[in-house]
Amino acid sequence: MRDIRRATRRHYSAEDKIRVVMEGLRGEDSIAFLCRREGIAESLYYAWSREFLEAGKRRLAGDTARAATSDEVKDLRLEARMMKEVVPEQALELRLLKKGLSRRRFNLCRTLIRW
Image (cartoon, rainbow, N blue to C red):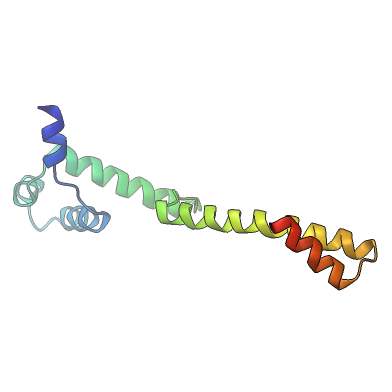
């Protein structure tokens, strides 16, 4: 039963949460009316409001750190993987050039390593 409730529960985007909190802060309608209209509990509105104000307070205090999104994490992991491939290749090239190997032998060594 609990899983069914979780699966059918509505998930609000950050933009929706901000819109609702801003409407509540404007004070044109009561919080109770706003919550009934949006279909949320008042406690949920106050939790969103508290998070919204805390984030603003942290930002104004100069704390610019934020949680990375999953897309950002994927991009950073891809970039790290590419860097891990490039660094050994460049180290090999440097070592071979220091030893004075010709470009032809260098390309042969690089091909063998990739193989």
